[in-house]
Length: 261
Image (cartoon, rainbow, N blue to C red; front, top):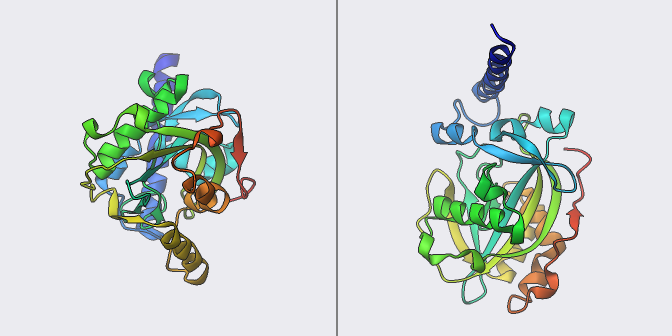
């Protein structure tokens, strides 16, 4: 067997072992007996690996990026985005993640949270075009928003956050997260495999939700949403008509808890 063939086979076996580990965990662990087949396929997507300054280092599968052991032992860090979509009344579109999601299933979060893929289009960094294209793709896939209702110009980049969080014993997140704001009326047809529920919420309702999470352990919000809400969201929300002073492509905000999950 040639060196190249041996390397290819070794990589395939390593990825298979990661899958078997996750499948075995689900057979005996906290979530469900079997990973949902659609979500399982998505674990093979290639995400953009970055260093702490957000410089591209290469790519890894979504599965490998989210295995907690890779985050803890190897510091795997990937690029992501969080969309905050507001309607004409200034209410924020929230969603509850489906129970089939691999990380943070059933948690409440902002409009759309996902990853740009390692391809020519979504790697484009000029004016954050790649991340915006990824956001447009996922808004359509998750929430059923028609492509012709959103343009790249509708998505406004504000800043980046760096955070790390554990979901359960097997899975976690470690991301440089691009925050995108948008204010527009859109049509919604959520995909059940991705979104359990969605609704528009006022500032007061979001504050009540965050208060409830500290009082009721059954009320769960994603860690990235809570971090953004605790540090930035309401200041930005008050300035929806003029966000230019918050646009910051120079700084990456390091969130509490990066050191441990």
